[in-house]
Image (cartoon, rainbow over all chains, first blue to last red; front, side):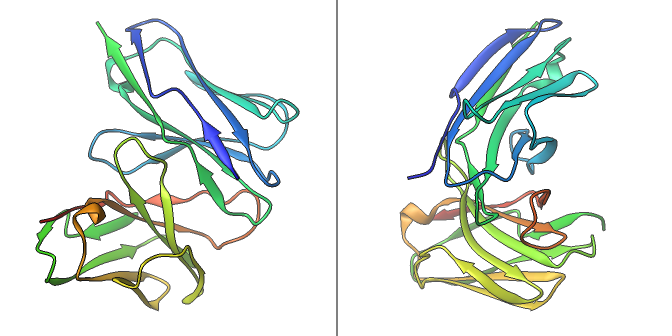
Length: 109
Length: 115
C-alpha cells in the first residue's frame, strides 16, 4: 500500500529552527507538496519538490531525496503565527495526491 | 469573493436528514475535489471532477452523492449519514487533473456533525 509518515506533533520555541520530516512509500512519484493548515482554516500551499535538493522560500525551505523516499520542511526564525499543522503529500504515478496525517507544530514563547 | 468558498461552515444533522454542501471556486480552474478530513488522519480523497466529468470515486458510500453542474460549482448531497461521517469536508480546485505540478487550492471546509 501507499504510505506517508510524519510526526504527529512537535514543539519549538519562538525564534528557533524546526525541521519536520516526511517519509513516503508510493507507487511512483510525481512530486511532493507541503501545505500549512491553521486550526479551522483551509490548507494553503507552501512548497513543491520534484527534483532532489533544497528549495528555499523565505523562512521556509523544503528538501527532497527521492532515493530515500524522504523530505523535510525547515522553518527558520519561528514566529507564533507558525503554529499550525503541516501536511506532506506525494503525487503518485496516477497523479493522485497521497496525504500524510499532518504534523501539529506548537510554538512556545 | 476570491479563491474557494464553502457553505455552510458548520452543519449539524440527524441520521435521517438530507442536506447539501456547496463549494464554489473563483479561480477559473477546471478540476474540483471533495476531501474528508478526520482528526489525526490523512486527508481522504472522495471525488474528483475534471471539466465537469467525474474522474474519481474512491469507494465512497452511496449516502454521499456529488454533483458538478459546471466547472465553478461542486455540491455534496448527504442523506442517512452515520455518526462516523462527522468530519471536516474540504473542497479544493486545481487548473486540471493530471500533470505533476498541480497545486490544489482549498476552501475553509464544512464542519459536519452527525447526531
